[in-house]
Image 1 (cartoon, helix red, strand yellow):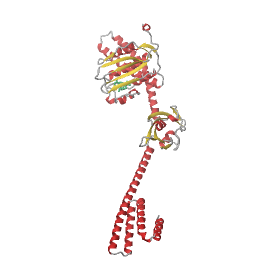
Image 2 (tube, protein in one colour):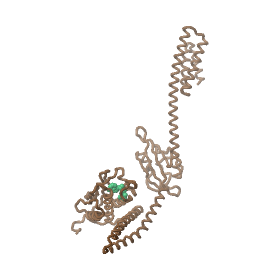
Image 3 (tube, rainbow, N blue to C red):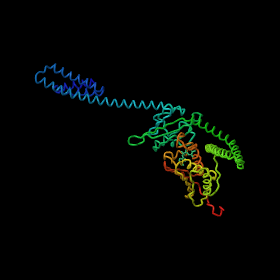
Image 4 (spheres, protein in one colour):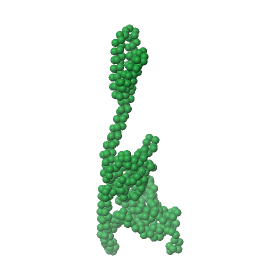
Length: 463
Ligand code: ADP
């Protein structure tokens, strides 16, 4: 740089000695810009000071006097101000750009450190479907080093057991191609020979214009949780099976005692036995629910299909449940006679659960209505209450196993969150669905549909 400037200077001197002053001004300006850019404001100001010093030296060495000296000093002062301003502005710009770059680099370092320290695996792919980042945890979970630059669509780098889907349907590919967000999709992969249960979540990354530029996948190893869950389920299944036999005997003996007590005059003892029977019924229900959940989980919930009149089953259910409440009225809105083909006992179970819930979760509203309509090839049954209602965010979750809207501490009604899970499974097994329409404070309407009998039996067949 210095050599180039010297060459330029000499060139000007040889070419035209009168333009040396102008050349010097330009060359010093270039030097100030250069140092302000390289070092910042400090570099610009030092160069400015040296330049002004040099100009003063020239003045001194050429013995200027009088008006000529004043003019020259004024020129130097103007140039000094100009140079100083240039040095200040350019230096400030350079420092600002440096700060921005530094901040960006720090941010990147911070994000990288966070990604590395996360207890979940992270995989980031760009829009060409190539992996651009993964963390150490990801390698540990998968049991292989996830290669940066690897193309996602080409093949899985780990064998996937479940679900059996093509790589193009993986959550990260869906995020990249369609902008789809996936949350906690369960997979089982193999680490060597060992199965690893993972939850994958994925989301697209957009630029300012909303274009997808990359996608991130978060992988959590839930193997330990899964094993504990299975162990807990096994224990509950075993315990409920073990409870079933003694419970049945106790119930039989209680029934026997109650029958004998009918002839007795000891009303106090009779009342005690009736209360014992009530508690036994509750226990029996709980054990039955636990066993049903176990059957559902092992795919062993079997259905026995038969054709029956749904109105009669609903009325039967209402009559039984009416006996259990003195606070609520339960009514069937009369409808045309509807024949359905389904598992009668299991549908009874669904109806019992919905009406029991309607009673349980209506502390103020007293009226419960059950309605029945035909729609296409299905019958739709709805149970409506005027109870506490369910927030919309919970409408899907209440059908999950063991899910309850209120924490057990603020819970006013007994229950374990199994009823709706079992009901949904029963209805789904009939290739039908169950749903809820509810508003907090106003009440809920639970509906499900079941297949009409086909062909519909004539009235004569009923009699
Ligand atoms: P449980 O009643 O034993 O807790 P369920 O599976 O039958 O279990 O119901 C799950 C949750 O859904 C309940 O805990 C309750 O919070 C909510 N729920 C069910 N039915 C109603 C209803 N009719 N009104 C208000 N909330 C309800």
